[in-house]
Image (cartoon, rainbow, N blue to C red; front, side, top):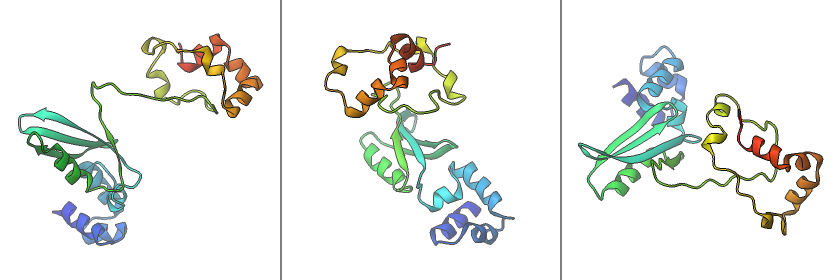
Length: 183
């Protein structure tokens, strides 16, 4: 009941502190805990309808039909069930609750594509912890280089490759070690 009241007050535009006190909490910290526990987002995320929030989603088979699962970095944000063929309506209903969020479909085992550009590398050249240890050279395919890449280069890439740093990184041994943090 408290969460429903807090949602209603925030929907009406009440500031977080006032909404916290109105629903009987000692302050916005308690309201924050309540929202993170039950909504997997902060009250601020809820109030802005997900602005700046990334919600991953996917459909999965369940004993109750197709399950639409929506998660944030804090946990389960939404769960909906639909009959086969009702997936689009289920997603429209759930995503409409956070119209300002970014939605990323969980691809599961489906193939996907990543474009990585080295046109303008910058510090830091290595990902911060814990990401720098998540993948090693054995987890990645070798770089697929082709001499045609050097024909009609973009002016920024050409200037970078003439630069001292670019020339060093263009050496195959350096390039292969820097591309994937080898052990």
